[in-house]
Amino acid sequence: EAAVTQSPRSKVAVTGGKVTLSCHQTNNHDYMYWYRQDTGHGLRLIHYSYVADSTEKGDIPDGYKASRPSQENFSLILELASLSQTAVYFCASSERGPDTQYFGPGTRLLVL
Amino acid sequence: QQNVQQSPESLIVPEGARTSLNCTFSDSASQYFWWYRQHSGKAPKALMSIFSNGEKEEGRFTIHLNKASLHFSLHIRDSQPSDSALYLCAVSMGNYAQGLTFGLGTRVSVFP
Image (tube, rainbow over all chains, first blue to last red; front, side, top):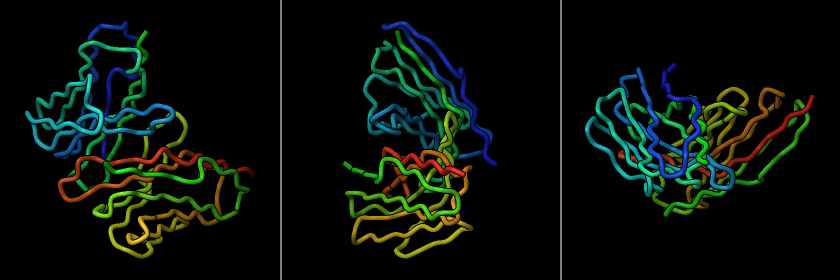
């Protein structure tokens, strides 16, 4: 089965601080995604990428940046963390856009 | 923007029963339809997908799609306690899919 790993698995950050979440996949997939999941909103797409060195905005990109330095790695950056960004963040990958997405284990982020 | 709604919000069923979950979407141009399952504290994992009108069966799981009604559903035959999870429906638009749009989920509890 496809392998997607995320680090850290949990993090406590202070309001206004910078947070970087990392994702690594060994599936040789072109597409990678960042979602956040929180109660009442479900899973929502933040950013995605279909090729290295290029990222696209998803449905809720405000307050987030993304970086795809290689096919295997995709990072999510919160330049100025806010309380509203407390959530579980999932990374996923797929071979092509409409294919099955394989999710990483998630990062639980608490912003205080 | 795509709006995906799921019903019911939660379901409690006895072991061996049939479970039926519903999903409606708003954009008639949607092309790909998914069900994901998420056990507590775990990552979402793809269950089944369908791309054309009709029915598809895989083991105890059956998915129905009616694009004209903007509706698809998941049916679980002979429900097991291990089926207890959050079930997420998801929709994508096409070959260069901009990620998935998820519903909020239906929480299913199967009791022995």
